[in-house]
Length: 156
Image 1 (cartoon, rainbow, N blue to C red):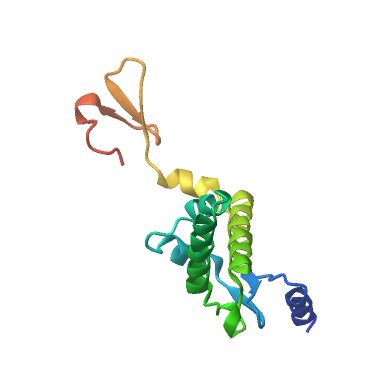
Image 2 (cartoon, rainbow, N blue to C red):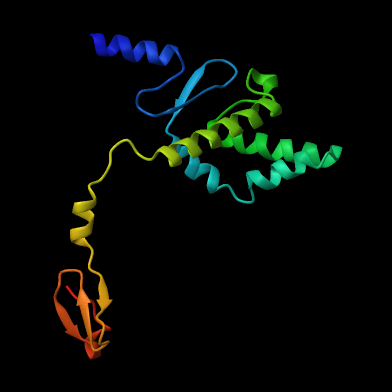
């Protein structure tokens, strides 16, 4: 009971304890899986947010309009947002949503995942080879050696 109350409060404050990205689509608050949205955004043919931002920053009217249109089209496609004429977001709001989303992805990347994988488990599974000083033998991560003539095959 207390957990669901806390979750409800966090949702009302705009935070999601599950790590979903939240945004207002012009009508209501929505939540999306950030990794799914990022994959969809990155796979859009011909869309690069940096190039669209450069068009906006150019100060030339037609280029600015093109930059805003590219961003709005991408955001509406990825987040399934309607245009302002249908109760959705304006092109400026689409750009702000994209900025927030990319900032969110940067924060996730910077902070890492909440669950850390033990380095001991990953190190024992990896096999690596280091040449010894004489250069005639290779020493594997497990301490086993092999002949240099057999160095093309991995040491297990």
